[in-house]
Image: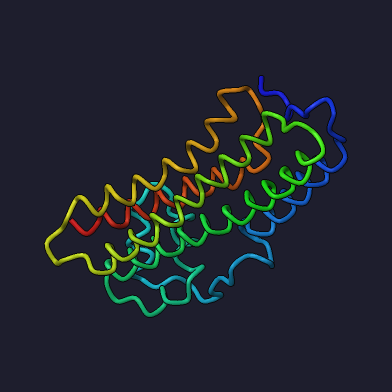
Length: 204
């Protein structure tokens, strides 16, 4: 079973607990149903959106992902929806990056007066992984946007490759049998990127 975060003996556990609770609260605000999450269209999904999402592995999440971006209502092709999906999934990764960076900064503040814990180092690593994901995601959005009429499997592979960043972030905690403070964010990032990839593959 996974254990809780390992805190350096010299460190005061209260700041770490506060940081985790703060990050969890922020993460929860980004989860479905939260009023703080990205505004989701209140109008019903278009026929194109419904038909497209029905072909994915998670129809509900697909519609939710697309409706998180108002541009989805103006989409007239599956390609339009693919661009919206990848853009929205990258936006979620950007939120994850902000959350991990916040925890990382707090960890650095603690380590200035004591040795850093394993968990602190993992948090810093996750912040770096999400930074890479956001950077790579910007290029992928461009590739999907300007994808040629002839299907290019390399574009779908590029979207798929983005999942390795949140997966690796979660993995480094799992490997050490530690509970990730932002596990839900990692899971959501992976699931949203998977749906985005599936929509891109529908362009075949």
